Image (cartoon, rainbow over all chains, first blue to last red):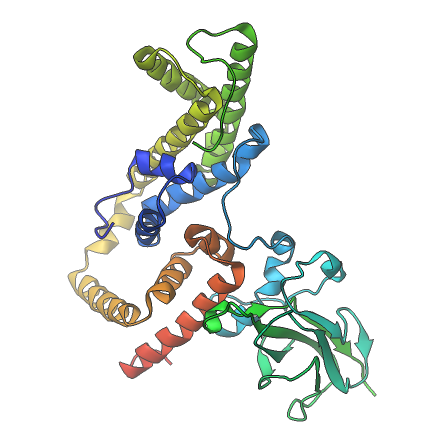
Length: 203
Length: 183
């Protein structure tokens, strides 16, 4: 699909929706879709039809996903917190933390203390449940508007002292844990915990 | 095919199969109309009956040609995808045709067009220097797809899609800075 003039044909759309396209072919189709406004609109429609079709016929397969994150739809906005730091298109309120994290996939590290939604004085440490088998973990502290305030070096164990470089004033802060899983080959494979946002009270 | 339907072939329809088939057409007609409405606006949802009719007609044509349909629900599903593609394309064409002339005329400035083309070329050159997956993630991002859409497009995990976009953006900024553009 090198040329924008050659749109994805109907047969290819059907095969895509049936998850019958070989991976290389699928990639070619997608490489065209991200460059072509018309096919992008068609993809969105086909994607939605594919996702909703199992409501009509439960035997239809849902779109495949290599690692399904059960909490993802509800927490996508919150999980995008690190993304806010780098993307010019994202702005607005900070990520919302959510106590429903108990339902989160275990295939990710978890923030423990300070817990989401709590109010406290200056926390002396940040404690987390590591991702089993991870090669390394890092801890990130973010401001309430999603700015990265601190990114630790690899942490040994499951806690890290509150960074002296981050001067706390009363307000809202978020933090998260970034793990490089055992299978990870590059930073692109890193797994990030749900961010936990807490408030620091005044004196 | 995404499913196996062990029911009777549709050519020799029995009442239960017919009822099931009718219900599939109706449900898919509704689904197509709602999906297309997201592209074409609420007006499209008012033509649900037309959509259903198109699906029915399309299946009828195929039935005429093939006599027997072995997996009715797969068949209806594939037809629904085809009809969705056709409806969206038709809707997009209708929208393009509806662009007012004065709006289209502003695209006629050759200097602006030249500058835009040069910017586009520089931008493309910067994008092309990124790794393949970062390019993909970034093109999807710049085309307005969100992280979840991008992960479905390329069958990536959420983290992978998000990280590829974030790192791609950082790379792209660096490339643009190297060429004296952006900040």
